[in-house]
Figure 1 (tube, one colour):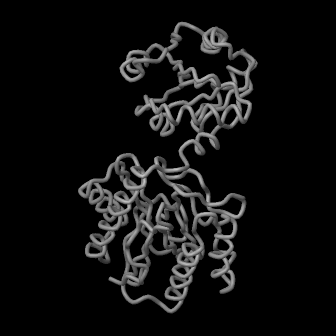
Figure 2 (cartoon, helix red, strand yellow):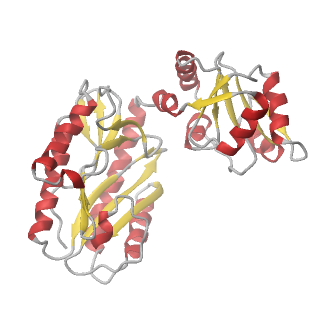
Figure 3 (cartoon, helix red, strand yellow):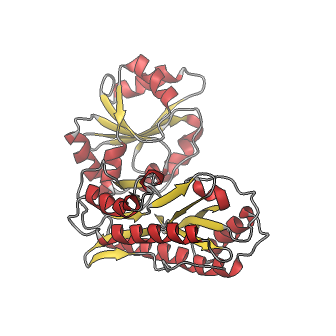
Length: 361
């Protein structure tokens, strides 16, 4: 149990006038207790009360497993033979939480909450922002693990440049990238490999296309190291790029570097996106830059702070996030250049070291 983070969370919930926070199985729960049980339709989660008291409420099939982890915390159990909402009502009434305001994390099942609300008169509200605020400032150790995680993606990009050739399937490349991240010490590897027109889909999930001559291939991939995540995007050109491909890539590269240059302690986040976006808008491609500029990264691949126009916040020491402008031309191709950036004791640090130069194989 991360005592310092729990204390910070208690202060944050008091400021929001919440009586408790419910954290259901998730990466957020794993961050707090080092474990996240299987999630099914049976309601469960850890409750953190505004007085600092912590207990876990779960169905009996999970009790034994949780007892091994939460050795110093209370575990309240309900059983399959009971009606869930009625059983939970009795347990929460004993904790003084019936009719109260309880924040929930991003995985709390809405169908469970609806039944509990009807029975117990609890007002459930979004607590994701304060759960993110709890961990938004990284420690020196966490920043070092982010560096190592980023270095793994750098190594794998060097490997994959030598591996690519026409005739391969996206799936083959995906398998190579994820296995190489594990070889280099990464855990929970993932990869988005999008070739040709598929690269115009920012979150492409297919893998069946065959690589062709004069293709562009978008690589968006990452892993974890000691639970801290990486996330890098690069482009590889199979054969000599066309004039249009060169132009779009250069705009993405310039936009990334302009955004990164605007990142420093105290920088106003909307200004960072404006500076980066201006490069693409001035060239007439603003309508094809459809995403935010970046997202926070750390224990989770996407967390606070979002780097976007609608986030009126300044960068602080200890924050880590991506810068990843892109241009997506439907039916043709899409491109982006993405790095992880950290605001450290020594200033702004670009954690990814892979070249921004055009890579042609």
